[in-house]
Image 1 (cartoon, rainbow, N blue to C red):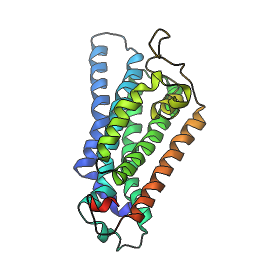
Image 2: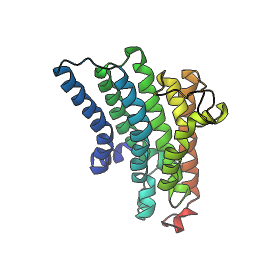
Image 3: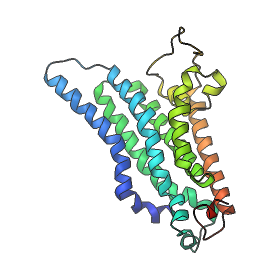
Image 4: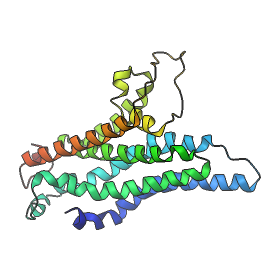
Length: 248
C-alpha cells in the first residue's frame, strides 16, 4: 500500500514539503557564500541558529501540518475511503501505510538540510545527533498530526496551537513538562540549544537533559503510539462517511 501511494509525494504538496527545508538552508548557504567571497569569516553559530530557530521551531511543524492532511484525512473528506478498503489491507493499517511515503520523503530532505548546514561550520560531532533529532521528531509530529486529523474536525488548528504555543514555552516548564515536548527531545539528541534560559527570567525553570538514546526512543515510541491510535480510530469510523459524519 505504501509503495502504491508513494508517487503522490512527487506531486505539488510533496515539493512544498521539500521547499520548506531546501529554501531556508539554500538561502543560508547563499548568504554564507557571499560573505566568504567578501572575505568575511564564517560564524559557526549561524548553523546552530538555522537548525534550532528555523528547521526545528518553524519548518518541521509546518511540514507536519502540510503532509498529514494528505494522508487518510483527505480520503475521509473526499469519500474515497471505501475504494481503499477494497484493497487487501485492514483499515487500521491505512494511516501508517499512507503516512510512510510522506515520512520517507520528508526525512530525506531533512537529512539533506542538516548536511547542508555543515557547510556553514556545523560541528561534525553533532551531525548524527542532529539527523536523528529531526528524523525522530518528524516521525512523531507527522503521526501526531495524522491522529489529530482523525480525532478532531479542525485537527490542523489544534496541531498549530500545540506546535506554536505549547512548544515555545519549554523554557519555563518544570522538568517533567519539558519532557512532554518535541523541543526537549530534539535538543537532547542534537547536543545543543539555540538559547539558554537566564536565571533572571520570570518563571524560568532549570533546563534538563535526557540521554540521547532515551530521547530518540521516546520520539519513536510516541510516533508509534499515535499511528496505532490513528489506526484504531479509523477502524471505528463508519465506512463511506466523511466530514462530521465520519468523525464517529
